[in-house]
Length: 440
Length: 73
Image (tube, rainbow over all chains, first blue to last red; front, side):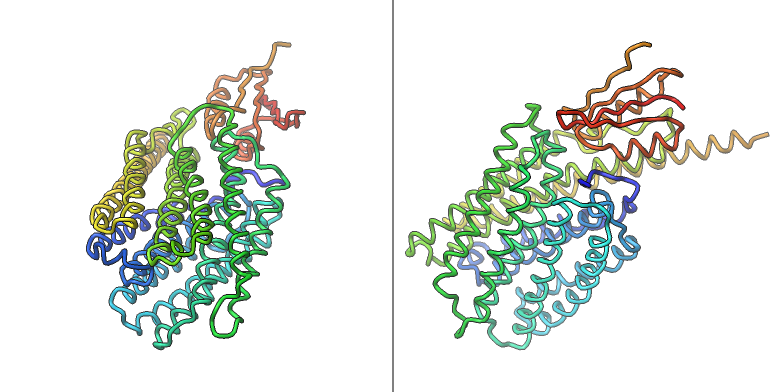
């Protein structure tokens, strides 16, 4: 059975929204941090500023939205029954928020005890979240590659968590973590969790919302398992003596880049073959994300081919900017602009009187506001890339990123307020109608 | 028998086909049929039809789309 959207299982609207509305606020903090540190943050990937910013984006922004979206998507698209979603969200959301604040503070203040506290909070919160998700995804009667890939992504988050907790503990105990462990943690976080989730979700949402042909069946089957194989081979470096990766693992990483580039090209080709020549913001965010993924894979291969460039301390920052704001934040913002209006409409449609339908989905967030924020996000992304090349641009890049995240928060809050306004209107109408029916 | 009314939702972005279908149901006369074409299985629509006294049948067409015929019970 191919999964299709089944809204009977949709969790209460507050479950995903509490995650969605928290995430951009931490993007604001990340931008301000970059503006505060200035060019110093661009010195290398190991600078306090770069490490704090990276974790603010991957944990506070990306993980927040992805956890919220997963709670919604697994229930709706996979028809899976999530155990008490309100309770799960009430436990997981504040804990990962607190864990992320602790982790970013640990990098900024360089306080070992904060790493230990962050490790404990994440282990408990994400351990609980992963258990609930695994049970839901294994019990669902739905079949198809989206479900398989979602399971792989949840597994990828588990591996990332285990490695991240180990790394935080080594930092907390003031032991230098081996580079190989960091390499493997980063690969599972970006490839095994984030990219795997994007791939699984894209199988369903790209054809549905962008009116493209479906991904070829063979591609949907081969890609996630090839990615899993690459990640497994890459992980073998943990066992290497002296904490040094083996020479052949360079080729493993290159194979991973070819896979990522191939997925990006496949998605761009589908977009090009779409049935309706309409380009909404979600379409444009996906297009930029896939171009960034292609640029990321090409840059990695180029940096491998030209070792003097690859050894430059800012080379990893170039890759980081391409993949975090370029690929993942673009997909996330593009999807938020589709998910929130859709959920507003869906929940309002359930409570609305048949004679008074809910407002159109397009009325939930003004198109102009979404396009304006999108342009600002792309400007911030461009400035961040340029700041890697010329670090004095770190200040304007940080401020532009802050402004983009603030605007995103404002747009999402606008959608929430619109939902609350029409919900109250519908409930007042129902109360009035019930009063009239029971009147004298 | 008159030709059923048609909503071709194949090139529409969700939830547009559902919105149009719900609007058409409001004016569907007894005995009249509504024909909806979609690439996906519209589970939300099915549950609304079940709850509100409509009968429907779904047929998979050669082009991979679903044809849903709806009428009042």
